Length: 243
Image 1: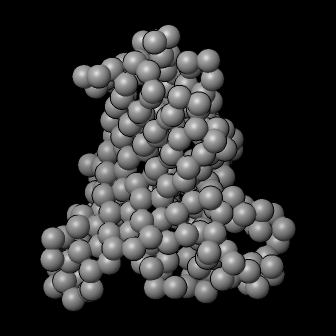
Image 2 (image 1 turned 180 degrees about the vertical axis):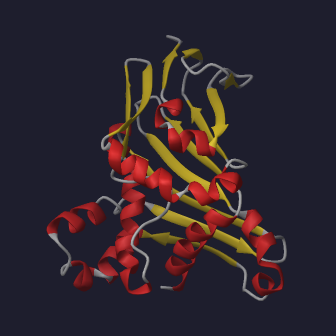
């Protein structure tokens, strides 16, 4: 699938240009909602110059559920552990926009949920998509998460939390070492949290987080490289008002 190959190619190119990532969650009154993990890779289009200008514009949405069905025969040949990882991709969709004329490149992986806990470890889930493209030589999605770290969400009784932790320090350090040559470029990238709640925010534990005029949206931006080196920089607890 051409679109899927473009996704992996784009994530590989992230090493060569600054991109801005956004993790956005919309909550409804009953705790259900939508999680979106996106990045703006427009800088990649600018770097591509004349070659990128030759590409056709793309604006499409890909369902991982459909993709898993399409590739079920090859997936069945994988180890059970890998099959289980790929199964977690089923609820997600991927919206891709690439326009050489306007130099626009945006990727948005998203899924609706009944409870935010269903989205725990979404980053590692997205990385599992690389297994679907093994024939192209891509087995992982750089920097979107790895088995050394884990992100967990909870939301109940007017309290929301995002917790990241390092599961394997040695493996995490290995990932950081592999990024050393790209540090200068990555230091100009940002990672933004943007959470929309059904009630006003009473408090947020992240110093420097901003609250929207209506009091229902919390936004926080941190240097991308800093967040990769220390995932806990994006840990946050949010308490909502009763009304």
